[in-house]
Image (tube, rainbow, N blue to C red; front, top):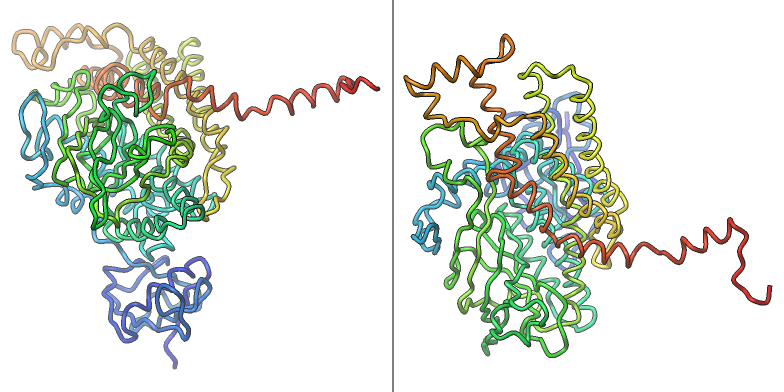
Length: 576
């Protein structure tokens, strides 16, 4: 009986270009491959066939080429042997543990916190929760690969969805669903959205620069992204400059370094950059940084029109860690007073002191007319990405409902009404984000971009609704949220018994559980994770006025006026 042969179908057609790079008789351990099926025979060895034609990138017949995969041991159950099984290579970093090892031991990083250099930031009690939040993205990819991972036609790898170049509108939708889920799991900023949105916006911009100027940025960028996917690195996006005097453009600043700029273009290629990037989310926890210009540039501001990628460990980088409200509670004994001891966000200021970037990592170099378009394209992705706040909102709503139960007030009509209001506001955030994603359109480069108007409507809602959700949560929590004694007082032989006597509520609810839920609400509405839920909601991806400008530009007021006039029977033609 002939061995069953599975074929890679059209969904993975582009992948067929990359599989034949192995010899035709190559044996591949299944640990490095992902087989889409319900069941896989343990540790099979497969043989990859080779195509009969060639294309530009390697020995294959193109997008629709099929590669036969003839397993020496069946890859699928007997009942599924005639069904299609798609095979994707696995990246180098797959698990949370592998990720944590990959960012540990980088002693060359210049990291400063509280005025002192931190030699191993992974082990610092204040920083560790932010590392763990990024690690959760790897856990999700393993537990739910359809949501947390994506099979990339660019590399033939099943990489993190945060590294995936969107190939369909559904890819954009799944980004949002993933972001909300991670918000639910961490209750904080998980720090990878900026890099994801930077990759997708730079992908299309480099293509358009090449079309106008005949440059090679796009092919260069694709090679870089392919490497990121194969390694499954964390990419941090960096756009926000210090800006200095906001009334002046970069070229008129007292100090030209207040906007990141090119200070040298060596004869051998590449650029040398100097300046700083502010409010950089998760930058220490990344492997690479994707730098972008921060705003519109004039024709004489060529040096500030730079987009490039640099390793976090590059010589010349200095990271100054940002403070967060109540952050030093992470350095105290016990976990109750932290509210959320497992996860936290991370922001830092990055200083670039004459950092050399090789030519293959430069994706814009002086094309000033594309700077503002890159910013607008990035913000379209990123403002829609604030669906993550709906995930955090889910946690806060759950915490508010729990504290009401613990207080014996869950059945009160006003409590139920406040929870409904919180859910209404939260789902409005999610709905506008998903609307932007479902209405995605294809760019000239081939990837998909969310609807710009709805992306800005989403973000404008986010500048307001989390504040109201937080107010209602604090209302239901009561004043004890901010007057609760410390964990040390509860562990004291003198004060502990007194506090436990007077803070008991309904039967079955422990005082410890009551104070834990109060501390979580405090953490998310005024503690260290309020950075990610409130202030980041207000200023991240542009402050509220930035969204109003885009909404005004895209609201199509004249068309709406014509609709009204038509129904009212108005004719503007004076001859009528």
